[in-house]
Picture (cartoon, helix red, strand yellow):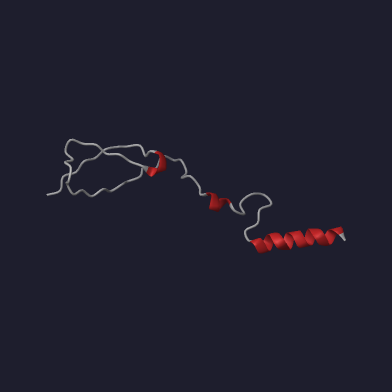
Length: 76
């Protein structure tokens, strides 16, 4: 028989969650399933996703090199 404990919790720094219940006995085997609530807020973006996203940004180093070459050619 499977018993269920349902708690609403807030995720702490670094993704840490903590569950406390008098029904939890040290040494017990438990399975944890995490269901995330959609709060309408977007998930934090990874810095690597920002590469090339800003104005004047380049997706690939080759694109930046091409742009610099064109600018240098204008000087001559």
